Length: 351
Image (tube, rainbow, N blue to C red):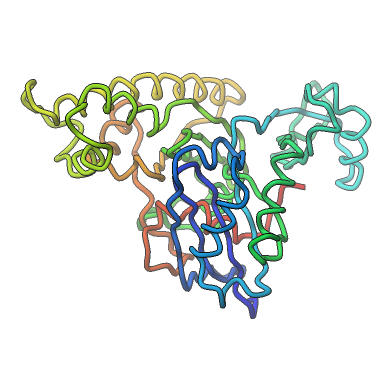
């Protein structure tokens, strides 16, 4: 077990989530958590629009005694992050970097000077009698990485690593055997982050990432839609009604505000669920035994009553909201802080 706590910081457009904790192979202990609300347009899709303002908010959102000389891990998500699934001839792990360095343009359409490309080994397969390694390539814009590291240094934190949200949540889910007291070890699990700025989907099979995608359906789009339809209510009033619905599956009176809210959510979810279904079809087509066992939802929108039932009915698979993990000791809202907690785990890294 590490002797010193680490700060793991999950960046999103409406809120920064911070956890202070320790990771070991036996488990994760989270001692404190902090959420920092962000004004609109300060942080969008991984881009920091006002460095001084965000520095001020982060400094004031974390107790100063926790910042002093603290090591920090960052977790980011952005539509600008490019992911590709590729196969290369089986080689020693030390040779993968060299192959990617000299043949990167064959695998990913990016300018090497503008992107930092890392990889995650997802498995070994036989292709027409030849052993190949499956890789997930993650290309992150250089300016995005440099911006977050500069922010950490401005705040007084020592940046150690910058992870991406899909990898963080996959590590967390695959770290535990029990999710909400359901045994999931070595299961095939789809994790859906219903976040503010985007919805992301990560599929893991027997502890390894198979698919990672970002889908452009989010809470912000839904809120814009609702604020147009319910112009007599402000954003906070709409949010209050949204998260206090009996259920999005309840039959509300067609003249009620609740009916308008539910219909707006379902309209967005229809598109979202269709997009997820297309990705699941792609995953199932990759291998004969690629069959989903469980759907896990987390993030902002997962707290809306009835979401689990809606998703479960659509996919005809069990769907649960992330509430507990048997290897994580944390007294807060696990669904909200899951990505930040997953950022504490430093195994099966993106290299």
